[in-house]
Each structure stands twice: as C-alpha cells, then as structure tokens.
Image 1: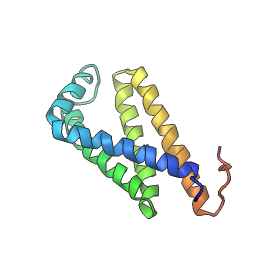
Image 2: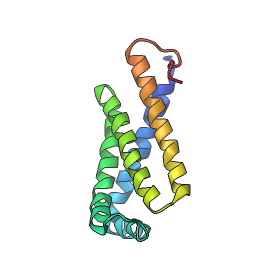
Image 3: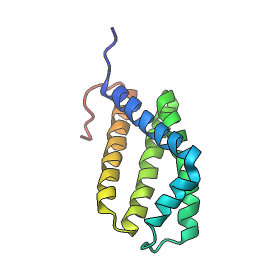
Image 4: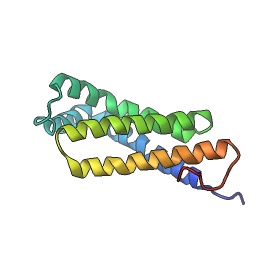
Length: 133
C-alpha cells in the first residue's frame, strides 16, 4: 500500500473545502450576495465593488477547488490562487472589522501556505518537512 503524504491530505481537504464553498453558493447566489453584502455596510468599500466580487467569488472558489483536486501541475496554481483569494477576503473582512472571521481566514491562509511549501518540497524531490517551517 502506498504511503499517504501530508500534501495529499491537505490537497484533498483544501480542494473539497474550496469546491464545496463554491458549489453550495452558486445555486443560491442572490441570497448569498444579499446576506454577505449586509455585513459590509460599515465598510468604506463601494457597494458595487462588494456586490460584484461576491457574485464572482463562488465561481472562483469552485475553480480553485477543481484545480487543487485535479492535482498535477494545476495543484500548485490552486494553492497559490487559494492563498491569493483568502488574502483578498482578509482585506475585505478587515474593512468592516470582523476580526473573528479574519482569524478563520488566517487559518486558511496558513493551510494554503503550508500546502504550497509541501508541494514545492515534494516537486524538488525533498519529501522531508520543508525547511521553511
């Protein structure tokens, strides 16, 4: 039996999580946008920017999930895109001072960063714990 590597566990977990974030929101897009937009009323971000972003976000999450789950060369792109979209979400969350949500997003950012480190370490043939940790 082949040994399961930490990267594969992270790949499956992050891939399914991002895929499902998109998948469950897409059929209920107007309700998701309306609910999420309400929390940005105290933010300095323009309503049109927030609304547009929220309409696109579930599709981005879905695509990131697919990229990660497919694996191979797309896996790294998925990890990088996941880290980027979480950073954008962190910025938006900070504008309305939802620090509890920001701390959850930071956990995602750490997970994407660690997954990326494991991926890069594995692709260079070094299967030990990445030196960056």
